[in-house]
Image (cartoon, rainbow, N blue to C red; front, side):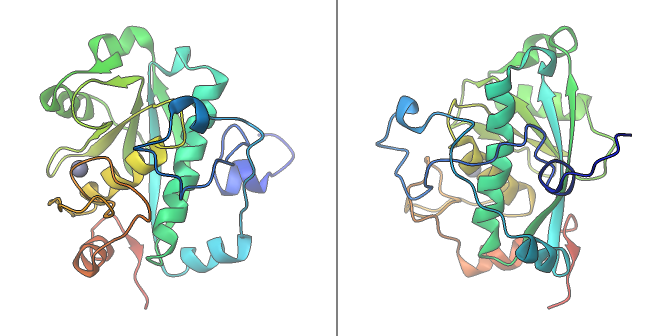
Length: 225
Ligand SMILES: [Zn+2]
């Protein structure tokens, strides 16, 4: 135990202390990785009052598992914090919070071929083989997912996987995969929906039926209207 409590690190769970990012109304399908790259001094804004409000209504807890985390560098770790923040912003409009966030990792040696996920089956195996102690949604962050569009969530599985992209768009990936985990199984044609099959484009929208599915998920805490 250390003597000081940090709101950013301990309450919000931002391990690196950096959560700022470029504006999320930028279309990542046309922008470049370089333009959207993670930078520790990107501006960020948190509302403690809003976070407390969400913790009194509905929220999910996340258990971050870094796959090969002993080899992750600081920028990769910041990208995870940013992904959580982007996800918080995308769920805020649904009146759903991201509660506490815990971090753990499996080593490069333990991860073996899971360092790069090359098929939905491999993603499912990773999620089956490992889990966090925390009781939240297991969110595996991997360096590379070579199929699909940067993430994977097995149906009725125990967690989800998100690829590091080198920019804040991994937060779009986390929000999308969390949507699957919380019960949204289908994809829609229009790219402006966050749960579309292709990488979505802003503004990221939800359909009402998706929101009710998510709110009735077993992983959701709270539930008072
Ligand atoms: Zn999907």
